[in-house]
Length: 526
Picture (spheres, rainbow, N blue to C red):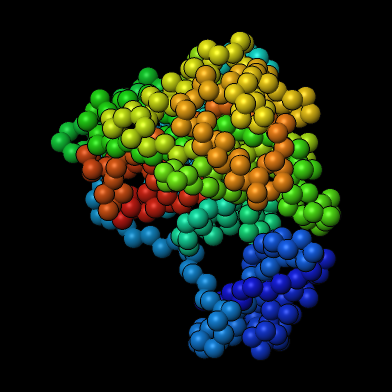
């Protein structure tokens, strides 16, 4: 169980060998006394602009586990690594049909991969098309064409994350996070995701990784059906016995729901079938665009532009006197704001950047927390609230453009856009007073957040920064409540997981949740 030596500083241009030597020296080791040593994680400390530097965690494997334990007892800088290996337990029950997974986003992908590796031959049912079909459909929509409600930014191979920054940051501390990173790297993701504190793949590279994962699943005996939406399921007692997908009936031994946070018709189907659902707090808001150069200057000062520094990114939060939170979310350095609707007659925004993050603008969501107290206590009321905002946004503009306004326009309640920042939203933007779109408490908290953030980062004081609305798909507004065995409270062999079930937020946590669902299925079935 190797050790991790934390808090090892380095100048921006120091070599890996020097960093490792320094780390070992701090705990009385040399390269001759360790089996293997390497950089485990790297983060940037830019709190003091005059001394911007990297901080590393270094991995060191000693001659024996006992040596590693003794060393950790002497030095607070050390910790033992967790075991990231998968050790499934296998049940004895024979499933009365196929193990089916609805959805091939991060949760569905990693659930399918693990089940396929252990011989369960899962059947994956994805409502959208494969990656190449998605790229064509999304490209056509972004160019002004019709929306394909089955294959779009939200639906299709890879899930919503396929058209994003491919961020792999997460707050969860599950040891399986390392497993996910290692598998992604094996499948073609950049190797630096294993060492960066804020790893990302980029939408351009992520698409190839997703295709490689699909090939791995099918090579191992799994089956993936695209354009096959789950439209119904049938039950006997507390068992799901049969499902309908893509117009076909399928005998089902276990059903994993990994449908994502935008599968609204699936939530309605679950409600009709009396599956236990709960309303869940989520957030809505806007995308803010600054010039990436201004973000870099705000963070790095005179060091902005140094090729050794990563593109500047931030994560900010504030809270009103009433306790409501407002925060930045899904920051995309050098990226673009993208049309992300999945229903006709709606406007939805999201953020995306490629691996190089070399676009002129940076963007991030500014999201305001909303709860059942704002939209109603029914299980689907939050979903309908978000849809109403998306429909109103569509009605306020022409040709599917997105409502937009400058920061100055937000504070003055005027429909104005500055020409100093070029909008990146592909279908175009139209100046709209955000007070016509959002309830008053949302616009007030957007103002509160921007004021607070401007005291932390200079770029947020730019009154010409562009706000594009609405951002409504921050997380699921519904929770498909489950018990200790990860199965639905209503059915024993229905396993809700990932973002759509309300138990994850982002690629990493969704992937890990999918792995846990697979492990529970293995624990039950042979």
